[in-house]
Length: 168
Image 1 (cartoon, rainbow, N blue to C red):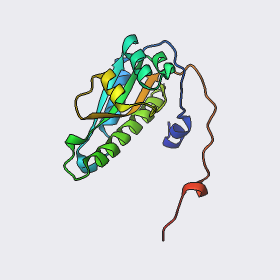
Image 2: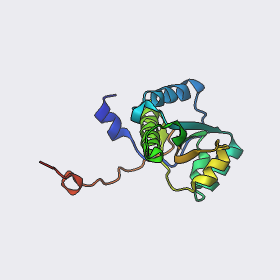
Image 3: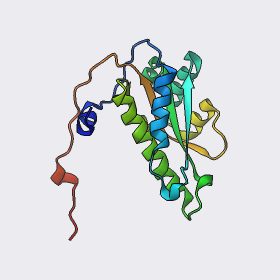
Image 4: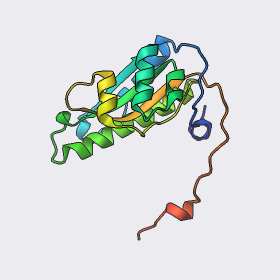
């Protein structure tokens, strides 16, 4: 799939088939994350792979009761790890790294024929508790992963002139 086709194929999916994701596919997603650009090459992110009915239900509850998350067979929780940064403003750099990692994971999921939805609506402390995150690992994105059981309509996007500002 060409890159622009991949971007067009990406949708926010909130319904998943009851079908597990193979460990081989999970490994490919995580390898994509490993290639992520990183401020100072500190790679200031951590990935928690969430599986199992009880854990997925707890994760759904921690995301303001987005119960559809529990339909997915698994999820990735992407966290910052500011302690890995050596620059001042560690949280800023870690947030960039984690966001890039989550974006690459998101695109890898789609390229592999799977589906996800970037979930940012949650209290980080609650999600951290669900995944038993180490101290200093702050969740920034939850990506439920599975096989789509819906084909949502494309959402509208702003026109370029609404958000592009040229500086000369």
